[in-house]
Image (cartoon, rainbow, N blue to C red; front, side, top):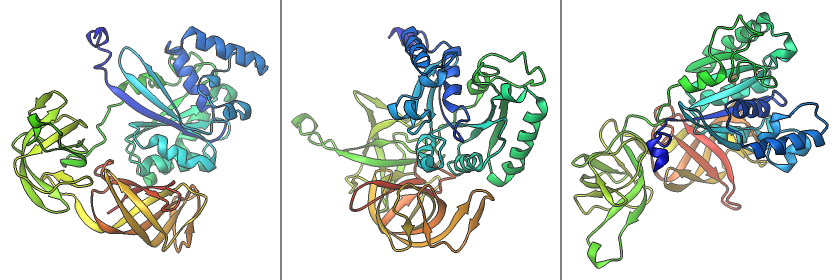
Amino acid sequence: MELASNGYLDMELLRFTTAGSVDDGKSTLIGRLLYDSKSIFEDQMEAVRQASMVRGHEEVNLALLTDGLRAEREQGITIDVAYRYFATPRRKFIIADTPGHIQYTRNMVTGASTAHAALILVDARQGVLEQTLRHAYIASLLRIPHVVFCINKMDLAGFGQNVFSDITAQLRAFELKLGLQFVHFVPVSAKWGDNVVDRSERMPWYEGPTLLELLEEIPVGAGIGPGARFPVQYVVRPNSDAFHDYRGYAGRVAGGCFAVGDKVQVLPSGQESVIASIDLYRESLTETSGAQSVTIRLRDDVDVSRGDMLVKNDPLPVTGQDIVAMICWMNPRALRQGNKYILRHTSAEVRCVVRTLESRVQISTLEEVVPCDALEMNGLGRIRLRTTRPLVFDAYRDNRNTGSFVLIDEGTFETVGAGMIVC
């Protein structure tokens, strides 16, 4: 409990993801961030020094702090999502270091799905590339509140203000079309640490915050909508004489707040009851706070099972079998009209069929292209699904938890697509 007394456990947590084109310096930036914020143990640094010498580098290669897979070390690229943890006196952080290759776009979607912010790197020598727009579009699609464009390798561009201004102007032109919420621009040199943790003396023209200062200031949203949502994961019926009358519904709050005495509906059945108690391990709560995992007991003996959702009238979610969604396709076998899949949404699992493949996104222009016969791996498009049973959902723009789903192959049980519900 000493950590709690020092305030560490109570510190705010920011989740952010990194993205960008191949060799834009994502791993180096994260390594620099960890090193300059003194979040690296000496034995880790010594291992990186040794690895850098073996590879013939003249200086310590901080990218080796994050490129953990052997295949990544051999190829010099990142092919998996690497999660890293560090803290400063002001905040805790979880980093999702995602791949830059276009064939690993699906990994970026995975890493960004729970992020509060996205760091998108741009090589100052290359400028804005198609993959830059792809990652910015995905950040917009996933409703990541804050997008930080790190214009990296400024040391190789002479630390010139005009280079930074030109790239910023290009990205500003796409900002409105992408529908990004809050956009930030930081000129950095990940290799030498300029404007990463410490302010750069070689770019005195930049008056904004350093990257770490910005990450410490970004507001952390809960990522859940105001409407009260509680997907039921498990029905609790203790096999004990002392609790033979106990019937509770365990799950995690996916939106809003629940309190003892609240009137609730059980969807999709529409049955109504009142919350009798909210239990958290060995204590009872008067109300929930944020995305808590709790057990809710109802006053009435109603039929509730896994996959149902407890809600309040503030407002009600949609209950239906027809879903329009944006999808990121993750499988080598293309998505086509008529294909059947398992759809997993919150704690519910149903079968579905692709009724129509309405369009695909042309990343270079950010336009939706129609008609569309198939969606290939790493493609982004709009589809219409029909489920075998009613689902209870919100639009993704209103609630990231109840507005998202994954598609699973019926034969192999592979996750083949990630969807964001439009309506």
